[in-house]
Length: 93
Image (cartoon, one colour):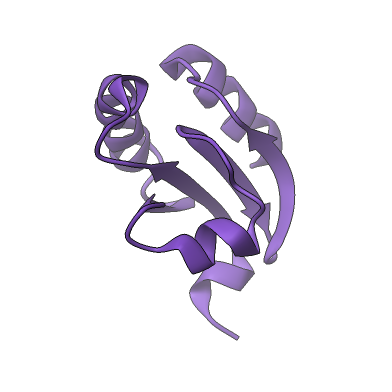
């Protein structure tokens, strides 16, 4: 079993043409830094990796998925600000 299945994981789906993705990217980077001991963070370009987007039923960007033990516990299909995302992560930690 991989590390991604054992802990809380955040997957952020973005693409190159999404303005909100560029706005959210520094938030994801900050979250990754702030929670690096507790949270695996992955950023996926959904255009470059359509198979992953399909696996998680992602059809819009930005989309953020939280997984615990490999299972989706939250899926946000819009921009989410740092405060909201922090609150959500703390809820699942």
